[in-house]
Length: 210
Image (cartoon, rainbow, N blue to C red; front, side, top):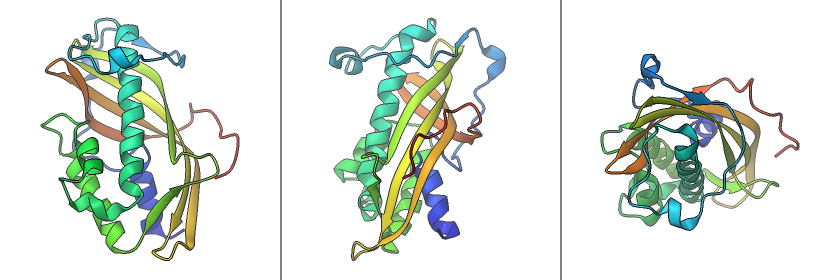
């Protein structure tokens, strides 16, 4: 895998980005509580579409909304990477789905979209590997910074095949990455503000190769 292709895979790795549009500092000195359970909470369609999502005074109450945000992020990135050329079109449905997950003040999405657009121009396209999904992310822990801000960690299982315009495989990427995500509550909804890549020492080992 070339260095550039490897970099975009890392950048695209859901909630485990290689670079950031912000400083990624969640202000941990304000932390009031945290959870470390990896238990997956099922989020109902009612809660995931609620116009007023709970504050972070109780980490377990806000956790399902962070899991839903993570799942939607995975899906949005996969939608763009299927044809990264769309990243330059802000009116495209896949791009709108991606940018809608960020707080208005976040500079992160523009950086990622520009990079992906450049990759599409070079004829790099992404397909799910044998796992059937490019990314499968799990919220590992939630730290409360304030009622309207949390920092949460995720582990992401990657299974990606990179192809050229003719559909011939160029390379593949698999394994586990991890990231730290700052989410903020804006108008009653939890959105991503920033993402930072972290070490994946605390993530489970992948059970299969891409």
